Length: 413
Image (cartoon, rainbow, N blue to C red; front, side, top):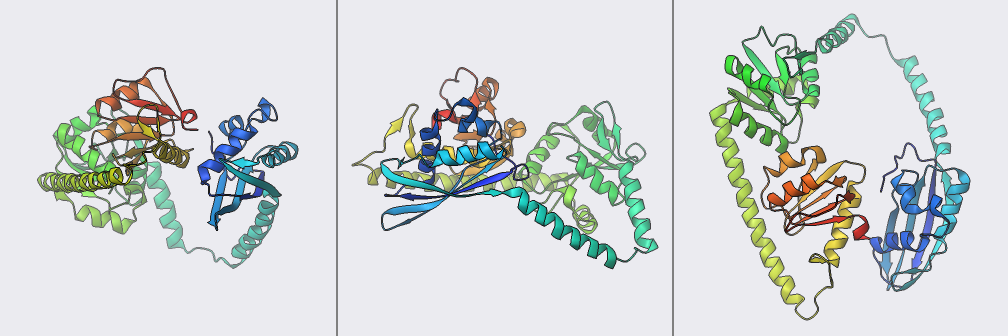
């Protein structure tokens, strides 16, 4: 499936739905795909239109009252008027949702471009008024703007690994090590020229060599990724000090004041190791507490379900788990990211698919992975070695590792 950008949508189909019974959002979406399949030809097949980005994500909003369900359906379209009208009319042939009678009525097809044109007119008026009212900046502001632009232009490639860096890395006795190019740009803008980036989650040989002959301050993001990179740095490089961005912030978005404050608050590498160990202990304690809560919850569910167990599908997956995986996969569409899940399907983290292997090294008790990408054999084998039991992706390569179940979006329908 694909998620159409609101910017590229030409039309939006608005419909209402009345159902004689209680159903959930996945039931409605499943009925839309299932009952329209093959109805109007392969060129207008809803699944294919979504995969190609011509039809966007189907939004369903439901409310239940007195045993009946009512709601709205919204579908963005980048097709022409005729094709969009055909898709809209197709919705009205749906007469059942699960075991319940249903009625869908298309209320209107909204032309998004009309609103955009009105926005352009209104915004142009505002900008024109702002131009008339804005005063010419004084010489100090102009000089500062030019100086910032010049500093950013000083970024260069350093060493055989061609790492993004400032112009003073070679001549400085002390360097600042950051995670990426955007971090280098931000520090250059605020006057720091002795800065160099890792440019990835691995530690390049250039950084290892520099750390042996210069005083190095590792200036890392204030998130889980920063913790993982710090662990790798401590293993292969000779770091002297560690500075961190405020919790939840990245170095590339810090102001000049925040940068100076973080660098003044840097700690020695010994203190950083102690803090990292303490963080690991807190995480392990939280994991133990969470496992205990999950165990108690599972015991309670087993007692409640002792008389009526939920149906199971192939691979030991319940219908409820199937719905949860499907919802999580829908939430990821278009992000190229992955959810890391615990045994109770709680979200332990969200990371880019490209960094999934590195992230698994720092997270324990991973039960499942849901990713907006194809599940390759290599990634599945690696996850299986880390103890992962389920992987859910947009598609998969043939074969499954021993002890793991790999599911695709089609298998969750």
